[in-house]
Length: 438
Image (cartoon, rainbow, N blue to C red; front, side, top):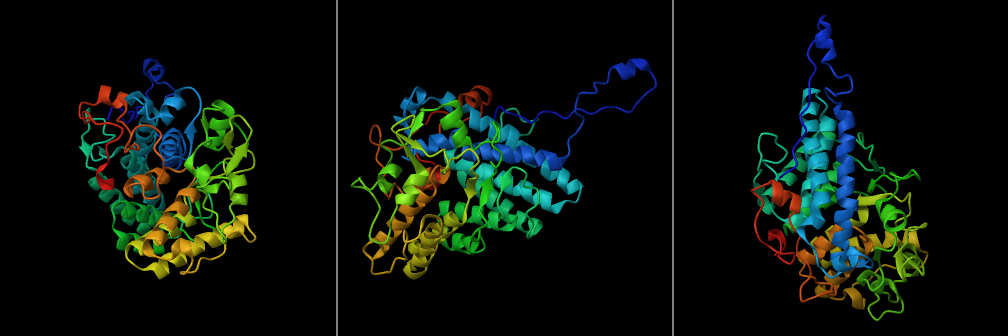
């Protein structure tokens, strides 16, 4: 990995000699408070899970279409290694590296909660990186003494992160401290369990995922990236991109998610118990900069809309899928209906009635599983996990392919990494499957 931790400079003891005094630069940092450093690492996590990497993942997942300039090519899966430089570099230099520094400083200060928060943030970063790229640097990453860090196998990265989350839980307890970059009434323990459930789902450890998700994020306690100030630099990153910096570059016109919610589409998921009109209006704008913009004015990507990094709905849909895959359709339907109840509270009244096991949409295990995955795809609009689900389920819900015969299977290793790290794996294409999703 080409990005390394910047060295920390120290200032020697004061001496009377004026020449020694003149050698000291008062503007050069000698150290940093880990309570401040964790905010920078969290912001890197937000950038990875809400910024450019997520936009690209959601284009590949059929939630957006490329509408202008280079995004037209992205929508056709025509990409080069250089297109993936920014999220990788930010995630490692400002994210993983800082988490590891904070963890060390927190141990020295005997601040177990801060240590646990840094563990959770590091795990969130690495799990996202590995899900998108497959094998990634981990054990040798962010070590200034190692110029060409080796790449760890995807399964090993996941095992490391799961162990990290397990270790964090005993440290954070029920605390919600140290969340400057985040919003919500979550507790770190619930967040760690939901992230663990997500990772175990990726590994097809359904029993383990059920156990973790059972202790995961509860109703009303979602884990958000914070965007509560209406000012440049604090805005929701989708708003910043779609309205402020790159208006018209991406669209929802022709996207699969639009078709699922559009009453005029033959693919729409509406039925006698499901009225998607309010959610459709919350998600989309018509006749704005493009034929169909994501709703950045009072809707899901409003300037001050907090962005879900992990949510109650995702946690319940993890439970629903895992129960369905272990032939417990009763519990699976129960979790699916809890999500529908949450939607009813937001988009009702009368929009989402509970399904019964005799309803056509969920009348057998295969239909129930598809309904769960379709609901998760729509509920997680704009989130990386939509792309992960499509790949790990072999596109069970039938996302259309924009170009060629295959959906993208992974991100390309960044050109900056190829140029600076001789350990970077050679070859490979955008359409290769990462190991855990084969």
